[in-house]
Image 1: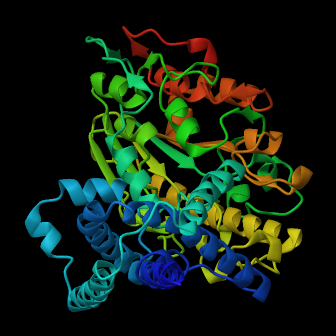
Image 2: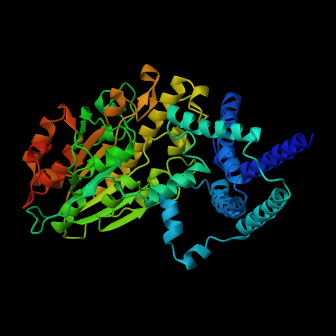
Length: 502
């Protein structure tokens, strides 16, 4: 009878403890999700319950070590509650960039984020925590022989089972994403950068390169490449555009495709080797280099990006997972032509592009193809709605590039714009969706080039070569070597044969 009484107290306490944890922390990852349908709501409800159940196992195991629990859990709870406040109110993404900002930001800057609502939220969390910990101290010592231990072990196993089935299902939500963001912050990137040799020079003068690094855009959904829908109504009217429909990469997600694109790494090379950053080479040749991005930097390519002269990330604490992420047109508010600089220059614009959730990437006036998706849960949307929403993101890209090109036309420099998506996107083929897929649609990113009249005047042979390669099958290896060939880099060994201007 006494054992039964202890068992009931133990179950009641851990139910209250997990309820508190769920309200203050876990639930924050679900409040901004567009559910759309009741089916989608039920799906995410199960998702939420499973996530909290999986973490309850870790909490219970920790509680078996009473002295450690009394110290560690309150600290852990308050740190996560502090993070969840910003997820609740701003849909901030708990990622490596945020952890870096927290650990490396000066105290006076950190104080600026404090407000009455945040302090009030923490006070409620502290009072709730105090009451729960008081209850914990009145409990009999947790027993390793308790039936709850078996439940806890099963709960922990669900985390590994779910993550093995689909990577990121739990890891990308609180509380797990805080742990993985911190561990990623501590890790060194796999790809190592080599020191660039001295005496590199460029024979070109007055060249302005705009490299637009896109996201999740497949080549065959561009009207420029023969797609039945006119997804590029503005670009189709522009002259001096060459679109390529046979670009290839086997690297179908950002973390592995971007480091390859920005270095002399081949799609066939392993990360264990050392490579040159494109920007390091250009800076040695006295180029001005600037990175302007709408994506948080991942560990795999952060060091490459910071080889630029200047780096600016807009909306840096919201990742592609946020539903309040800034739209790409905001990038142009920070973009400036290098018309008045005599130096050669390269500016990289890193877009959020056509990354899922498609509805978050555009404004309402670009919902041309309908019906569109209304829920993040793919199972509650039709294939038609998903493709419509995807194509609408391309209309938005068309508008973005049109605006950018019109700005570039005002420059007197030899200006060229290269757009390349980091990978493609799978849209229901063989029952698969999105990217990180072993499907040809994910391996065929869109790529196009626009050049100014002044560029064509000075480089007619380069334009001729560019057009001659339009239908060739070319790997994303081309970019590094193309840019170095374009500006006639000397005293540095690169593969000129891979250049689309050669």
